[in-house]
Structure formats: structure tokens, C-alpha cells
Image (cartoon, rainbow, N blue to C red; front, side, top):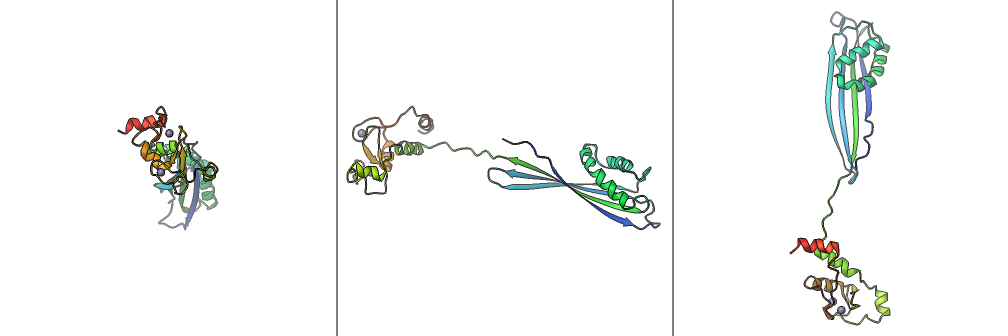
Length: 224
Ligand SMILES: [Zn+2]
Ligand SMILES: [Zn+2]
């Protein structure tokens, strides 16, 4: 159910510290590359997001370059960064070398600190197992298939008739009147209680629910 992995979002900030030439810093040129790999996991079912991050620092100091061209800076960066980070290097090089050259890299000593944040967004759908219906759920469903609305009960003049299970009138309680396949009418909850014990109409002994109902079979199969 996972969709295509979106491209990571790469944010690059280059910070330049221009160091005045001095005895101490002569020929001192430094790259400090801090990378942070962030992964945002988005649960599409609940909307929850969790974030993890890992940071790495690549460090190179007091190095020399044949020239301060984009090409030579790129070669240097490829040595600093691990070979598997070439894709990152490809993104970093234009930005770093432009900044470095614009800052007078080669003429004066500079320190470059590069902050790279790579954010991966991964979306996933949590599979929540659907609990199996209990026997009670199945019986409630079966009984409510015969549900009679208040208007219909009234038009049938059955409001004052009594439920043969609890002997209270069909129309006067909060229970729902329900007609079974044999056409006898009982309260829903009265019938469910009855059916938990036997699968026949309390009045005419007709078998009331279909035992070949697959949901019912699976429940009866698992419950004793
Ligand atoms: Zn009843
Ligand atoms: Zn009946």
C-alpha cells in the first residue's frame, strides 16, 4: 500500500568564515560539512508523524588544491564525502564552490561550514486488523434485518401487541420490534437473548437464522 517514495527534500546552508591571512592561518583552508539525514514517517491511517535524524560530519583541514576552480573543489569534495554520497556531492558542489570562490577562496583563508539537511518523507498505511464478529454481533445483525419502524408498527396496529418473550408491548419500550422469517414479531434484544440459546422461533419453532451464513459459521466454529 506504500506509494512511490518521494524525492528527499535537501536543504543546504553554507556558512563562510573568512579568516584574515596570518601566520597561524596561512594555507589553512577548511571544509566542515555537517549533514543531517531526517526521516519523517507519516502514518496515513492516523495522521501521526514521527521523525528520526542522524547526523554525520565530514571534516577536512589544511588541504591544498591545484587551483580554486569549481572542478578542483568538486574533486576535493568527492574525496571528503564517502563515495556513496556522490548524489549529495552533486547537489553540494555548485553551491559550495560558488560560495567559496565568491568569498575569495584561494586568496585568503576561509572556513566553510556546510549544513545539509536531507529530509525523507515516508508515508505508510497502518493495517489495523478487523476483529472477528462475535456471535452476539452476528445475531444482532440478523435480528435487525427484520427491524420494524415505529410508523410501520403503528400502521399494522401492532403497537399494543406484546412481545412473547418479555410480555411487554412491542411499541411502548425503547427496544426495537423486529419481524422474523416466520413473520412473528419480537423485541430485538429479547430475540437476541433467545437466539443465543436456540435457533427457533419461541412461538412456532421455525428455524430463524441461516446456519450457512458464512459469518455465523465462522463465529460458531470458534466459540463453543
Ligand atoms: Zn420483548
Ligand atoms: Zn414464529
